[in-house]
Image (cartoon, rainbow, N blue to C red; front, side, top):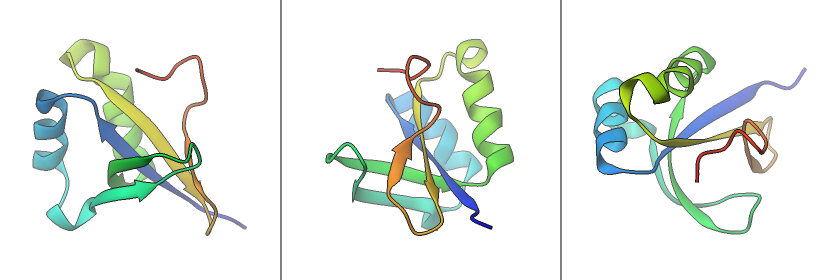
Length: 86
């Protein structure tokens, strides 16, 4: 059985501040190459934290891109398009 690791990528300072207050400092991974071939700064989190932030983006005025990794695979966009925030 493969488990998933979830990541949040804040798209503005307000979003980054909210995530940094909610997660431990060690959860931040910088300059990580993802499945799109680009480098990203990501905050690792559990599925419940990921869902909480992704579901509250609109209400809280936050902007994130979500990512996940299955087992030892590549970090991929999650949820897949068209729900991604640019």
